Amino acid sequence: MRKSTKILLIIYIAVFIASLVMGKFIINGIKATDNGFEFNFDVRGIIALVLTGISIILGFILYFRFLASLTVDKMLFFSSVPLVVFYGLSIFLLVEISILDNTTANSVRSLLNLSPDNLYNTILWAVLLTIVFIMIMFFNYMIACKPINKMERIVLRLGDGKVKENKLNIGGGKQFQNIEHGLNKINNNYKEKDRTAKQVDLEAKKFIPKQFFRFLGKNNIAELELGNQVKKRAITMSIKLEGIEEKNMLSLEENFQMINSYLNIIAPLVRKFGGFVDKYLGDGIIAVFGRSENAINSAQVIIRAIDVKNRQNKTLPNVQIRVSIISGEVIFGIVGEEDRKIPTIVSDVIKDLNNIDEICKYMGIKFLFTKNIIDDLPLNFKINYRYVGSINAGDNKEIFLYECIDIYSKDYQLGLKRNKKIFERAVIAYNNSNYYESYDLFSKIMRDLPDDKASYVYLNKAKEKIDSQK
Image (cartoon, rainbow, N blue to C red; front, side, top):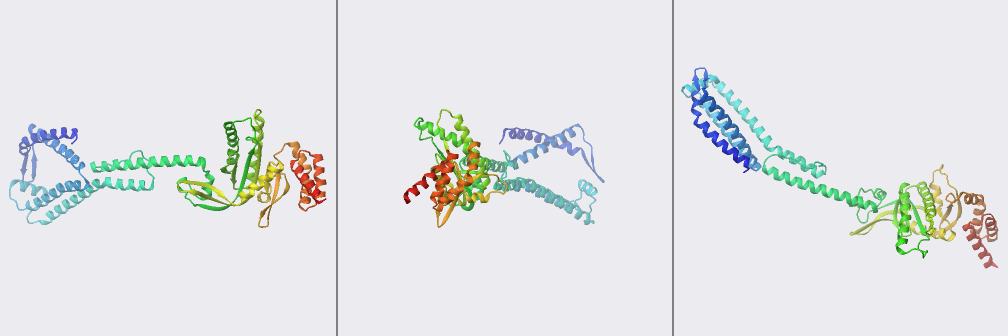
């Protein structure tokens, strides 16, 4: 029992005893007449009425506190019993008052317009009492069950994960306070788990690109399951960095930091053009794009950014970059095991991409892409390129390769554009085994543009073929 309830109970007992002692003055102030009752209270009667009123109010307060301390079943019982008893006594007195013969009974009959010969008014008063009783019982149950309705709504919202309040409020008695405390603990646990899940999801998205979730039709890492996959056409890009580990002037730690400094330039530029990094390869990355023009633009900006960084790092070795791009069907999926799920792409184009990168490296080309990349570009997309040959991808499949000219300096671009038609004729002649024609054309290019590494490689290969035929 709470301390305030104990104090209230002591006050109630004192006032109740006082009102009982002075109750005779209330009775003396009520006079029965033929037309009803007359009230004539003296000072003591008024004091007795005040004490009685206070005791009734305190009694109701204590009664409601008593009900609030009970469980729902006991509260409904103890709140209903007094009402039922009062209703039963009222109906009994209503019936008996018609046959009683004393001054008080006559006054009550006169006040209520009742008589033994007129049962109609008695029935009306009984119906009125019944209606009042039913309404009071209805409101009694409604108030008693209000916390249950609140609890139902809160539980449904908790089930849907829509509760945003810091504290849930049910109201009602002690039993509902315990339930309220339990629901608040559930809500707090739910919010904590939700915060943890969001934090994990945010951390995961640092390693798993949001575009990957989009390709798989998922929203967060919790939805990713081993074996999830989807097959789509995509643009796959290989970016390789060369020239860091070959320099003995840097320690392993410096190599590591230098590679990261370049990757910190490349990865954001991939994302800027709508792509995402699928794999970090130590000395490069594999990236995926949805559109060819985005991949081309990203590659050009990345190559220029690396050139700028090379110029800024005057005391460090220059890093050479190679970019290869191919279009084809890839499978976006989750591989690994249950304890370690890794999102990645799986496709034959990765093998072709590695072969293209080898061509880049062999011929000293910065940026190569395939014919299907050109076919996918919008008609108004501006890009300068030249045909550099083809590779055999198996199953009688030939991949035609093109070098981007726009990423070089202006003077070198002019030289490449000036010799483009001759270069492409020379490549076609070489592919058709016309090695003498190819040799002559490449020799002409080398005289005009001696820094053209691709022409130099082809020139030597054509000379080897000619020498082998002699």
